[in-house]
Image (cartoon, rainbow over all chains, first blue to last red; front, side):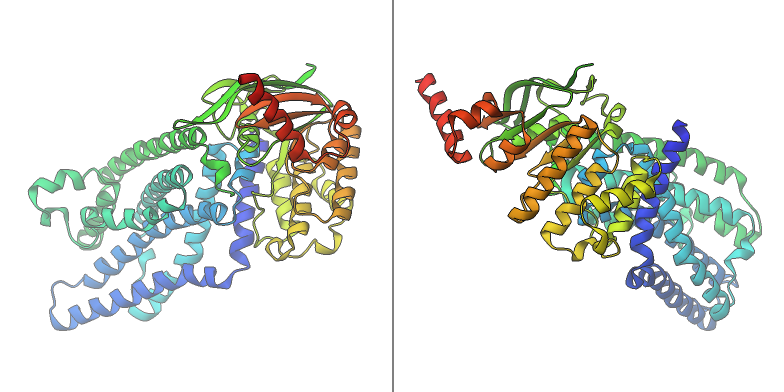
Length: 267
Length: 246
């Protein structure tokens, strides 16, 4: 009974975000537009590289694969955060916080919505990549699922912390939703292997789940080897970060309640 | 459990400023109490602490026996609230908003219940309109529909008729009064309107500078201060307090 009620509340919040999304074509377009632009720009760039400096045969696969997987992380996090920001923008936070929904249920609804937004955004892009550049990301096979799961888990962990910061500090913390990904980018080794980083920074890179995913993808494309060990380490790190994300969100909600900022967000 | 809301030595301090200072009162089941006071008197902060949205610096608030700082989720499905300072998502239609909130509160026979509150609050024609496109008064009625959706035992209302015209205000007050009577609900509300307080409340807590100056039965208030504006009454009580301190 408790679980059924909980699922009902999670469904309610998912429905709430879906109502907004499905009736706003600019938002829907936004989901598809940026990944498409990214894919086209990088696709053209890699074709240029291929034609003029044949670095290696798999340039298109390496770079386009990296771009698309990075977008899974970026769009996953933005999908989570933006759904939550809807509540701030519509001055609805107090209504939600006064309802019986628990923070963990709200988090699960935001995760579900992030997944839905990601599928809407990425599915057409992967099809376009096949049509325009002959790159089929689905040819990565089952490992693609491992990459996807690991990236979306990290995106949710980051989303939890950003949602908490916004709740605690108000809309001034919105900027984190963009900047946090830019901060992660250099150490995530999206477009180059970890070995190209300065020696001192490599241990920090290995603390990021993203590094394992992109290293794993390169191994798969270049040597047709699936590194299950990398994915397991990645999953372990994600479990830790997700647990930390839930804990930090809880602490930030408590802090917001002490600060009295939840009701003030409606004013 | 006869006591619906118990507030004991409730205090909220922001930095060095006391928003609410050592207030206590009890509200029995089925009673309606009004919190009145000027701007900055501490009414909304008091409501926020009673709803568990704000954690008090000292003291505690219990609703239906549950401490709202620690165990608010035990009781939130039996409460609801409305405030002109909190909006419903504007891009959702009235129907969609009530559908979402009904599900959040796990309301049984939701569509029937929605139909009932929509009828009661005269929202039929607005049912498929986007909430953001409605007038302030219409939005207030949608918020009230949300607040009544789960048939709450405890209803917290922050200036419930602030953005309504006099005719609608009268009508909404009658509706709330009927709901309170039929459901035997406990209502805690803030107001700036003497007529509203007289019509709806059994008692009134007069607040000033974060403190409760007096808790007065509405009948007494009516008998002793008839025809006087609420602001004047508050000034009168605040003056008495100053005189006592002197």
